[in-house]
Length: 239
Image (cartoon, rainbow, N blue to C red; front, side, top):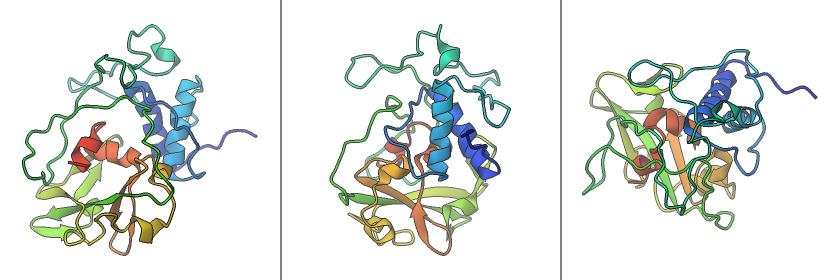
């Protein structure tokens, strides 16, 4: 059976997955997510890069560095001659050479300073937990011109990253008393998804990340967290 061709928003998820593999060395997930979901399309892009498969959309999205030049490719066959083609693994003692990227403005936790975050090795599997073992739910929401809004109402997308609109601010909560009430320990994840694991969205097995769309709460895939906060999204969201 020929591979599926992504269209519309799925083409962007697929292209983002290819970018994560090529420029951040991300490896395919250990188990395929639910078919045709955003994280599945992103993972298909990652798999195609490492398998040497040309982009299904016919075009490759080129990521640029801060100077406007093409970023260095570190993942897949195109990086065969690159010394960072095989990213260091956790516990190897090597320091990963991936770029740091400034996170958007957000609500810091008490005692936290700065916006420089350690970028974990791509493909590092989450710590396994028992099914239904979500310990905390983190809610991402926004404040635009002083008014609380669902996060997507204050973001614009340039094809690679999300950007905060003027007057906007990203807020993160794990308390049911803040935001739209979805955060907490364990928070709303069991009510929204039962025993389904956050790993289906590329998240850590014991931590759910959700947002409110104006009508309901839903999981935010790891691919979108990278687009919002950069590769070090865990250090931002879990702070």
